[in-house]
Length: 99
Image 1 (cartoon, one colour):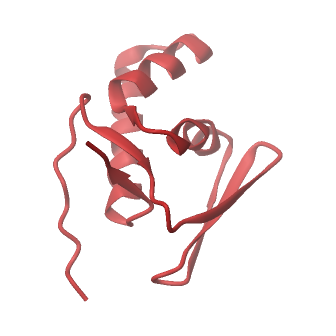
Image 2 (cartoon, one colour):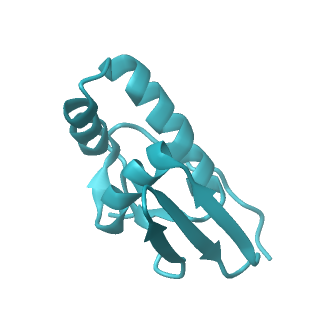
């Protein structure tokens, strides 16, 4: 097994849920399985709101703009939170960087 190489991401990085992830939305939450590790993950309402937009390729800046508009919040704080979340799920191979 190859070690996880942590990719550098920027606001221009385009991302999408990995095609091998199995998931479902339940009310305001999302649950999914990473089959290589057998790990199940659950996302709260905030994580689930982000998850909905990752089904199709999207840049991180587009995602930030959508969520800033939707939740009428400070873009700097939201951007920081999203970048941290994206890095975490990218490292876990839940999402992938797309061209």
